[in-house]
Image 1 (tube, rainbow, N blue to C red):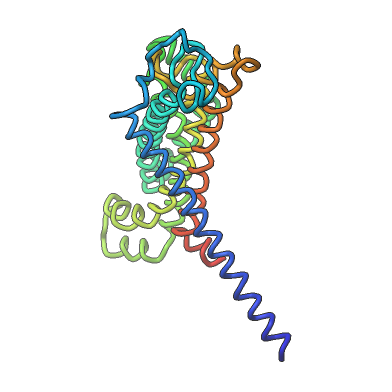
Image 2: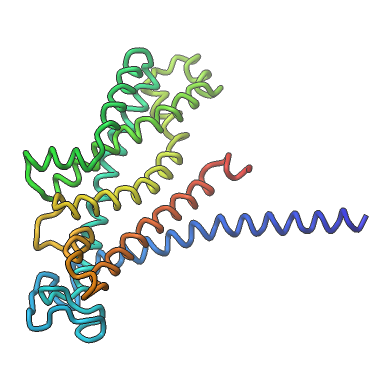
Length: 289
């Protein structure tokens, strides 16, 4: 009898540890992203120094020698540039994911409701867009529009549309096979009404979770575009451009590359943790497992 009781106690303890770990993912991700959003908003009204202010006499000063995190090759305050870059990176990523997620979700829900040729056409369009990575799309757009915020947002959003369309289509098709949808169709509801009242509310959690995870990818993509000079135009600071400018000074001033690299890694980590936590919280299948 005793071994059975001890086994049950250990099983309960394991379940508690598992639930705590799921909550910690959500809490850790929310805290990290909350701090980054606070820094981004703070940069709009205050930074230690103007991010674009050059002080050549103080160039390449190490952390704590001049300012908290030192200066770059032009004497600009690194902390101020990181704060301003946080706003630029987050605003571009969030805007692009919001646009791509909205358009992709509309396309996926519509294809699931209509089916037939529209579904096949949507899948073929997704395949074509997936064949063109966002970096290449941005290079093409940059040739016509020039580098800037609009180019970066457009390139990332175009890549996000098929990502959300596929996820939304798959989850919508599952919802259309449920009994509540069958009952709604039996009483004469139109496909539009069913999509808005029954399908969309039941797949919204998956869309939110997928959006949180895709924000991490959008941050990486924005940094890559800025690294290639296709992001926001100078002198607006971005983490990707800070990495690109630091290449020449890796041996002399390694903090110029380490600090923006850590900022990018921390942001991606935070969004991934937040997405995992939201998935465990909102997805009943994960909760049952």
